[in-house]
Image 1 (cartoon, rainbow, N blue to C red):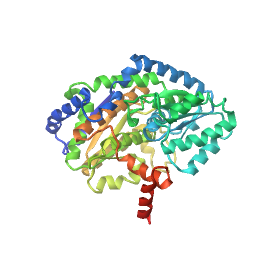
Image 2: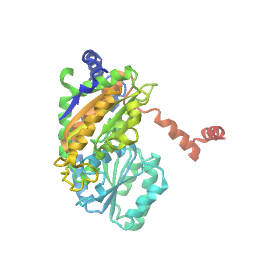
Image 3: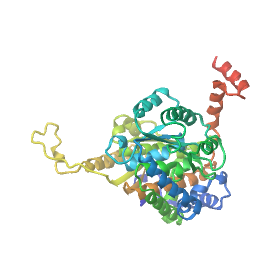
Image 4: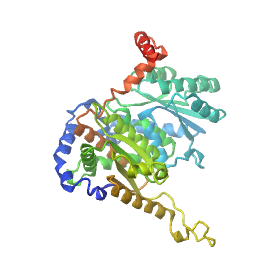
Length: 447
C-alpha cells in the first residue's frame, strides 16, 4: 500500500550501504519487539491496530466512539480542544481524507474547529464569534486536564456552554478524552456526568492518533474509522517482514545513513495542500521522538509547487544540510480536464487535452531531478491514492519507522524531557504556587 522508492538516492546512498544497515535496523527492531529498550512503558501503539478489534475494552471503546459520533453529528459544530498529539493526528487525517476546506464544503457532518492549541486570545475569540449562535459539542482531549493551553480554552468554552445550555444541558455535549482513572479532567467528567474516552497509559501523545484521541473526531467528520484501522493492521503485518522486504525498515535505515553523512534536516514534501497537516503531525512525531541528547534530524516541511516559489531556491542552491522525503500520491481525489482556449493568451494551449494532475506530476518529476542534480537526496514514499486504508497504513508506517530510527540513534524515542523546560518557566512567570523562587530567578534574568 505504501512503497519506498530509492531511485533518487543514487550518488548519495549506495545499495550496499542500505544492505549493510540491516544489522543495525534489526537490532533496533529487536529492542522494540522485546520491549527491553528505553521508554518501554509506552509501546502500546505497536499492537494497537489489532487490539482495537480484538481486545474487549478497545472494542467497547470503538462502539462508544461510533455512538457518540452519531450524537455529535446532530450539532452544527464540534470544537476539538487539544494541543500537540491531542489534536494534530485527527486534524491531519480529516484534512487529508476530507479537505483543508472541510468546514466550507456541503456535508452532513458538523463543522470542526480546533482550539486549545495556542494561547492566542484573538484566535479563540474569532472561533467563539463563529459558533456563538450555533448548536455545538466539544471534545476536550488531555491526559491530565491541566496542560495550560487546552485547560484554559476548556474553562472558557465550558463556562459559555453552561450559560447557554445549563449545567444539565451540557452533559450530552461535552466529551472528554483523558486518563482512564485519574487526573483533573477525569475527576471533573465523573462528577459532572460527561462521557469519557481513554488515553491509554502505554501510548504517548504523539503516537495516539489511532486511539480515541484521533478516532472520535475522525468519526464525527464522517470518516470510516474501521477502514483506517484495517489499513494500520496491514502496516503492522508488513512492518515485521524481513529487512529485504520491509520498506519501513529501509526508510529508517536511509534516514540514519544520510544523518551520519552530515544531513541535519529532513524536509517532508507533498504536492497536495491537503497533506500539509500530515506534515505537521510528522514533524511532532519525529521531532519530539529524536530531538534529544544533542542528536536528531530537524523535521521541516513544504508543499510544492507552492513553496517552490518561496523556498525552492534555498533547497536547490542553499546550504547543503537537508534531504527530502517526498509523498508521491499517484491518483488525485479529483481532476480537471484542460480545454483549448481559442485566444491562447496565456500560451498554455500546449496543455490542451491533458488533466491538471498531469501538470502536477511533471512538476514533481522536474523538481526531483533538479534537486537531486543540485545535491539534495530524495526519498520517495509512494501512495496509490488517498483513502482511509492508505492513511491508516501511512500512520503506522511512520510510527514504526520513528521508533526504529530513534533506537538506531541511541535515544529514547518515547520521552520528551525538553518540553518541560518552557512549561516550568511559564508557570513560574505566571505566578503558579510553588514556583516562587524560580519566578524571582527568571525575572532577574529578564531584567
